[in-house]
Image (cartoon, rainbow over all chains, first blue to last red; front, side, top):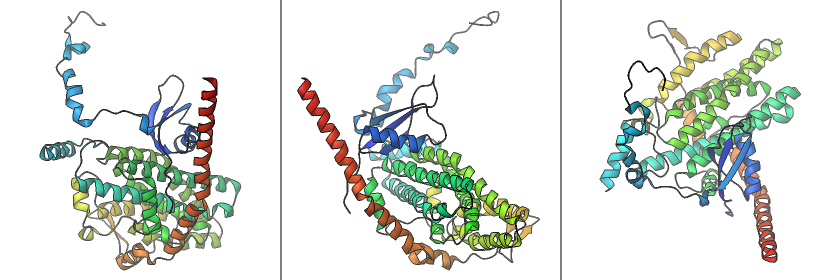
Length: 95
Length: 317
């Protein structure tokens, strides 16, 4: 059997105007135009889409799970970035 | 280092967190998932065949449109699952080759023939019903991409079961002959549907490990029991008889008790000796081989367009 794996594309769909594109999955296609057509058939059979982005999976640079603590732990001790950190007098109902 | 990683993996599993593609995972976990997800994908793809043969013979345009939508969904489900499988580091073509060579299995139910239109009803009602029972708990499985694919599949699958039940309802409420066809379809699909949940718990060697890894949430027998409890009253509503003389309601347990399942049949069919095993694989292989020129042409076309773009860019520069 001859093997010619088509490249892998990551698919992002905007479900309706006003929302951002969201990653929904991936698929194989020979080129970008075919990836858009296939994404239409695979991911929007029930009106889930108003717009499609396709990105070659090889073009994505991802952070590594090993860097997780280096990247994200520094945010752990900065609770003052959240409004709930601040005590307000009861008299103030909205702020 | 390895111990740290294993420790973290186990902590994730214990706290019911998802494992994602780039996270470290034990080889056995990866292998189990590759086997299960690829076989699940193959089942969706091979599952198109018994129904596909009735698209051109559907009794009305409406039924035909519905059946096409359902078969197209099965293709989509296969693709979601193949993609989920690839996140574990396998190549799509290798996975498909394993199906064609007989190395990978698929659900044994699809090795039974669809003899008439009532079978399309019985498949939707019973086979998709059993599949949903199996798949709903998989939405919470510990491997993220598999769980997410299952959420999509389950959302789409519920129409499949309803359309099947509606066909059964129409036929069971039709002429005497139609009712006989519906009963005959139930007779033939009932036991194979119960086998879809896999061997009994005391003969299912991989179950314990899969449960420990939160891949499986319920045992085969638990899911089978749920299915029987839900489905028997539906058969009664249709006015059809479940083909099991030993079926009885147990007042104390609040569950139905069923007769002995013929596991020798299950083993025979899954190991290749069912009514349609050969035909199914031959059809798949033929589709793959006959489609080779399309795959090659698409690559050639995209290459030509890329080259043309490159030469216009050079000319412009």
